[in-house]
Image (tube, one colour):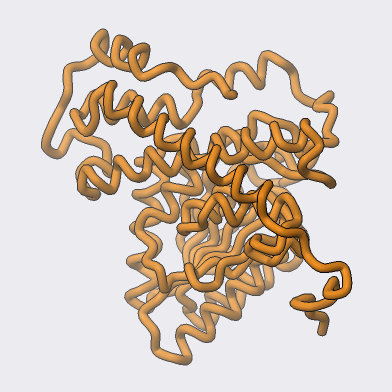
Length: 350
């Protein structure tokens, strides 16, 4: 498991800092969302972390084949962006999309079943880690193609506008995708037509093994928004409050018919690019420094500081997540595998 401070340790740290504040001095999320929403946000962040750790453990035990791309360390980005979304709003995701799926309401049992290649998975075991979709919850699907979700989101947003629906599409993508042609084409068309879409770049500093400093001309990817006449904002992707503030602002703008926004969440993946990554391009000191900025421990400390939870409540959230993960893995293990004679059913090609 990742090194998240125990709630008692977080409580001790908070007690040594500033006394709990109230009123307008609190961060945005604590002013904007009710306590039960914030508590569920913390639960979702823990659920994402433990799902990915559970998937990693299952991979090491030979229960999952192929590879996977883990977003451990990026939980505040997924949850913070999805907080203002409704069930009829939609998202497109990436090859590193497990957190987006869970933040949009996916069931971890069905996700584990998809990982295990079982018939009870979201895509009946045909999609695996990089292609989970849950259209009923507004998740149009993860995508193994870098930048592949961007034009899909623009198309979905165009559909919403033509149907006069009040809904919004969020397109998650990584920093590597900002140098793909699809990124520029998608932002341009969305701006021309003032589509209700929010582009969210999760900048974890590396596209595979290449740093953004070596691959991208601008310092902040959000600066590219100016070329397409839309707002661009760079936020601390490890702060759930900062991410949610940017998301609320962009989503409200989109719902008013004012067009798209580009949000850049600066964050970090604690693991390598994929399970096959030997991680030789990053130093241990860099990784440890970012782990010390862990978004879950940070959010827990804020929740304690502002009186939203106590240490016992955090322990209860953790215990509940552990049960949910254990039940999800057991559900997947006991689920039937697809019938080989039906291997091509539910698989579509254009």
